[in-house]
Length: 180
Length: 312
Image 1 (cartoon, helix red, strand yellow):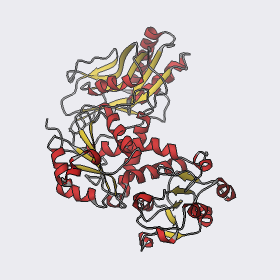
Image 2: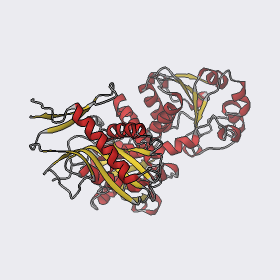
Image 3: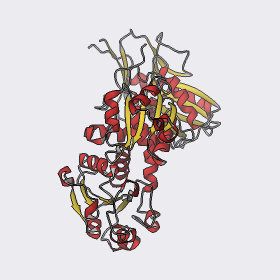
């Protein structure tokens, strides 16, 4: 299995900083904004962004971790049962400006399930989507990101993975391309 | 990825410890779901479930129905008193007629022990046993063990007492299987007339000295005296039973430690448990009811995900 780094640590670090500033540009003091990280891997990106925003002097941003397993459209369609991760949403979304956060946007089906799952917490004023990586030409649904880290072209069957290093505090994300 | 080792839930006896852990883990996620402002998920929207209750039930029937609806399944209900069973139809015929209406899963309570087991061999559907006579009541045992685990942590080596009408109790038998599977020590306490023969062969100890048992245990599950299943008198009077085997505030205060009190319901206040105890901080009776919905959602979700896959 060959793997290739698509985005270096430095590159990812620059992207994160840009995403952070784009959020600030659009959301100001974040008083009516809620960041929602998708379990399992979108939450890691969200935590990183929250840290960066804190460095910019914006803390106490409302946020939550959302698992969408029970809203997925492939129940009884895969060999393996679908297993959930924890949901931590101690915030109501009624009238809020929500930013959904995930690491890789591929078919768009997780985002569709997240849009359904979010309804359980009220009717948000708006929902935007932030992703670190967009796999181009692979969408099954009409879903596009509002905030985008980088676009990647990968062949069908390839896996694009974001590897987070928890230990180091900065420039800790890189991408691998696996050829199966 | 983990899946259940069974395709029906007939009794705890047929499960593996990993099944219990998987059900508990899944139930924890559903407990979060049922505490959301909107408590419903669409997972089972293409599944139809029939609740067949050949015996009276309030809590279990409501709990199953709510669990099914929270998972977006379509639900049909059936009670024996208003059905063709009273016109002489057999169980297999009744169920096959219901299945002909394209039902995917059956939740059944029946007064005869082994009814769910029998049905699972006769019909082609997923069967969940919601209590079969004096045999098993697996969903109750799972929610009892789950509630205990929530309160006490890992049950390995914990001491759990079951007090009351062991002879007629399906809750007792399922609880014994589940608690032993999770590594707990189990002691039963009842008048000698209410112990089944050879019950010790399940790896439990027995006693008829309530105070002794209460001092021994970390938690006690108080069972109701099932008058409706008794053809003879098993003890001289309710008053005498209550004096010897009833849990009251005085008894709890005399203990060396604080113990957790469970009751599967329905409660006969003043018989097996006084109001003082049932409404106290130590009783987790209403937690059991809340957890019941989450546990039943987990059971239905996990069994549902193993149903014939949708062809794509």
